[in-house]
Amino acid sequence: MSKASHPTLDALTATAQNMAREKGLPPVHLWNPAYCGEIDMRIAADGTWFYNGTPIGRPALVRLFSTILRKDPERFVLVTPVERVGIVVEDAPFIGIDAERTETPSGPVIAITTNVGDTFELGPDHPLRFTPEETGGQRPYALVRGALDAKIARPVFYRMVEWTEERDGQIGLVSRGVFFPIADSAALENGA
Image 1 (cartoon, rainbow, N blue to C red):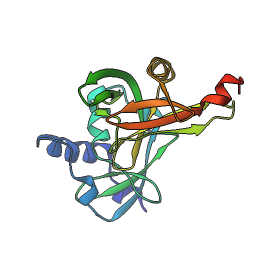
Image 2: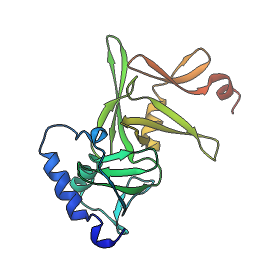
Image 3: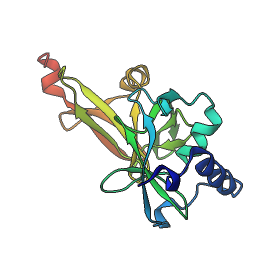
């Protein structure tokens, strides 16, 4: 694709700003415009957004772009009603930077806040999952929306570990009535 027909950051920003004037998140899951190629945008593993190799220093602009981010089967894309461009995501597109636990009459609820300002409650619609790390530990992720995950920051996860409980030989977290196992309790007792 030639540079002349490639969408610019300004064009994406203008379209996203127009959509942001409406309440709520744009319905990116309903849009299927033509794929316009890759744009030099990257979300680093630490959650920093880059454009043309330079960090995007305006949090409001990062938040704006996060609202038009979608995961297609083959790649992450920024999507508007008229264009869809691929971007690079090194790990998860979002970082869980805070967690709060509240007790409700139906049990505990854990709310996660991301680096782009999304807040959601772990449960059936926002599951918590773990992937093994090379060091032998577990890396926690939570589904934010669509197929977009937040990697839970290590200090946040350490706080969440204080909320664990044991069920059927597993140590895990409970939120909105769902038990999310972290590890086998016997393995933890044996130092594994």
